Figure 1 (spheres, rainbow, N blue to C red):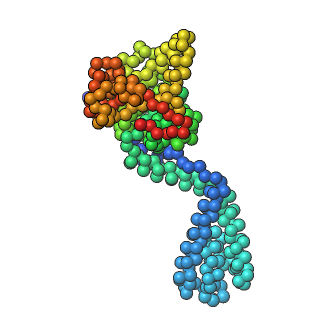
Figure 2 (cartoon, rainbow, N blue to C red):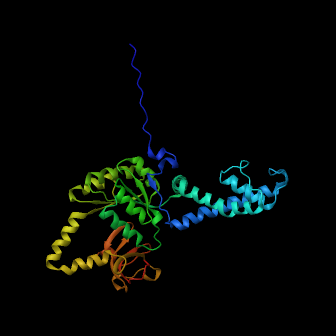
Figure 3 (cartoon, rainbow, N blue to C red):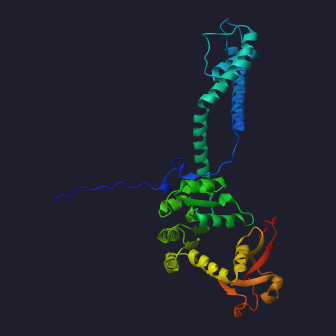
Length: 361
């Protein structure tokens, strides 16, 4: 019995594509430039090309003759370079007098260049931008390390990015946003962030975002089931990355913990708890918002224990200490383990931030 021959077509993964094929999927933020400056650059490049051609022709002027058989002068070289670069051609109508050729160089040729800029400038700009994007994507994919990948640029994702960019020495180029909504990606790109278009439930999309080399992954989609799938894929790709997830329902926390999440924030319960507290002590909500806003007022920060503080109690420090982290475990300031500070401990404390202070300890 002859078995029927089967074959399957291997689906091409995004992570296997060359950089030029990722233009439109990955977007590298570019610096805005005014139209006048863009045209000025094009004109400058045209002048540079014209000067280079004139220089070459002038060096080899003994090998050129005009229609009268006379050797070329410097003006003739300019004329020849002008009509050649402007694709006008030569031989059918030839200016004989120097005045006519000077007019051709000074007036007619710049008008031809301007015409070419207006006629095909947009097409050339698109092609140039695609090439530039492909080069920048290739360079970024080769060098990106220890960055943060944000899954979802909705309300939670944007707030997370605001907190990231509020830190000291924050670099927007070290934040990659993954979303399937073009409007959200445009908003992220306008802030100087690198964006990847696609569904984060696909592992190849996560690989294009560089999850395998990221130091942290923030998962903030609109659905809890999506958060579970993304967390599973991200943990499989990068076992060492710190994965932080936001969910709506507390019943899904254990699923995310089992999927590999390091920390899970329940958005609905947190908001509901604050609403309940606000009915009795409304100023508590204002204080919590102040602590969570790093730009001004009070903020929660983390720092290492100084050698002079080792052996002492965190309650006797001038800073308002909330807790300490020892061997990766958090202890409240009133815990017995926090009675004496040890080398390697890190303190969670309340610091004061002025409106113009961008430093974070």
